[in-house]
Length: 244
Image (cartoon, rainbow, N blue to C red; front, top):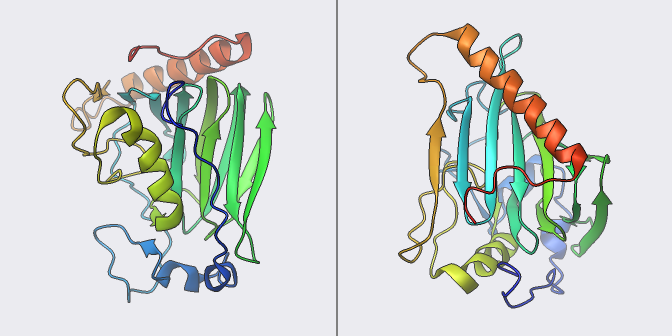
């Protein structure tokens, strides 16, 4: 993929039986095909994700694929991401030490997951469908239409381990239009530090400085972002076409 003009990529036909046998267990995080976060050593026992994931909220991350709106519910400090992604792009290529939850406001998406037999399952989801991806299951989101989805993790907190066979496909889909990349750092396509070709548009807008302590203002922005995403998603319009 890599946008409407990109070369089409398919889920891998290669079978990964050793990884498949480990899907959903702590052992999958130590696979030779898995890239841990920078602060985690391969031999480190897999903990639950940190309560503070380090991603500022409310904030908006944008690149040529679309936008990620990060909001935080202050009652329990849960971060929720509202993603707008253009047709033809891929996201993720990773897995998490907790359960990932997704709700599709609008659009249509294929979700690839690694199965117990080491093959890749592909399931299609559309408007108003809810998806749960269990802990320790490598996955990819393939956007068949311009889509708006909400995403969060239970228990709360975020940390991702890249699954190399999938992440290489995600990177290749973007590289087809944007030049070389080294994979997203610091989150699931959220504030990456890749070196793409000049002219690639990306950025992170922090709506309320983390040090300001203005909880009421943060909450006000969070409500506006969630409400706006819901209205836009349900009406079939795209969210934040800043990068077009």
